[in-house]
Amino acid sequence: MPAAGRVRGHAILAAVLVLIASLRIVSTYGALSHTMDEPEHIGDGIQWLSGHGYDWDVSHPPLERMFSAVSLYLDGVRYVPADGGYAEGLKLLGRDAQYDRVLAQARLGVLPLFWIASLAVFFWARRAGGEVAALVAVFLFTTLPPVLAHAGLVTTDLAATAMAAVAFAATEWWAEQPSRGRTFVFGLTLGLAALAKFSLLVYLPAGWLLLLVWRRPSWSAVRSRLAPLAGAAAVGALLIWAGYRFSLDGPLPAPEFFAGVRSIWQHNVAGHSSYILGQRHHNGVWYYFPVTLAVKTPLAFLILLVWSLGKSWRARLPVAAAVAFAAGILLVAMSSRINIGVRHVLPIYAALAVICAVGAAELLRPDAGRAALLRAIGVLVLCSAQAFSGAFQHPDYIAYTNEIAWSHPENFVAESDLDWGQDMKRVAAFLASVGAKQVAFTPYCGTYLIAGEAFPKTTPTDWYHPLPGWNVVSLSGLKVYNHPGWANDRKPQVVIGRTHWAWYFP
Image (tube, rainbow, N blue to C red; front, side, top):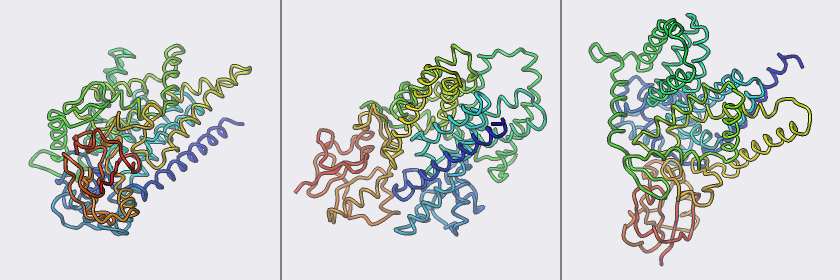
């Protein structure tokens, strides 16, 4: 087959993989209720789109919120004055049929970001390892449960993944020939990354620094790129200002941007309650993200990653940029005091997919003999195992854990890696099925009682002992905040999804 035909064929197959993953993502909309953060993002996005400012919650930049807000606007949803972004989001979500429609429409707005992320992975892997690597990278990326999980939610994590992949993939392309056109495009990617999530302001420079240390370019090569880099930074800064609707506070452009950076810094200094390996923490622990990645990533992917890293080192495969990006993210995250989920390092999966794919392409090289056949079978088995691992737990991609923590994920992780409030619809359906008129329950995502579907009368859970009748316990509430204390030593009578335990006491 001619080279152009092969390129087109691989691109078509990659598009089919993205389509299949998109259908899987959309199928989770109706099954999962809103998570802790989604009402805030929905409300703030509508505020931004309506032109009423962007001052309710500046701790996140507006990019992903904009995508969801546009999707809602096209569906006829309009700004409703409320006391803050969370209240606005709850008003827009409403109850019953309206709730399901608005939540699905808001989540649908995030889907194009998943397509952008997949496209970036495709081109990054193709540049590093060719057409086969590009196709394998898309397969791996689009079957990763954490990616599927956050591609189906209105949060900032998928935007961060997409724009980080785009920006870092564009880095080498620009550095090869920093022409005016490439500098302008590179600047756009930098601006979009800054509008996606504030953590990228640290993740991207950390990756660049590691890449520079590895390659040790000459001073003349670095100096010749300083002026174009300044130009790219200027383009990025202008795009950031545009993203904040050219707001001003005296001479300071985009004051919400700087306020957001300051709020994240303060949050990190203050710490955040978290849970890992059966232990509660507030100021973070260095091993949080390595452990979380180890149990939230399919084992087949981890096996292929280890092999690919070893092969890349021995054969000098061109994955330095992807390794530097992944290592930069992990090193920065390990020093963070905010440990609340693999979602905070979600962009790492784009780089890891590229590394695995380049290694897999090496295994699949068209050699003759039994060894080549065995290598191809090995890749096929690992890819099939990854696909099955995620599909088996559909639609519970948020709560997904691999074979290490398969039956008892609550012994390893909690919060947005397990129970982020997404199973409240299931809890309501279970209580309806048993005819419960009242329940003792302190939901981790209590706002579902305000915006959602019918729920029985709810009494706060007593910490010391269960109340008569049905008692439901959120695993994040139990593991992160030790509430209620009486549930620690009791086996559940009923497990609802993977995130709630229930008992009935006459």
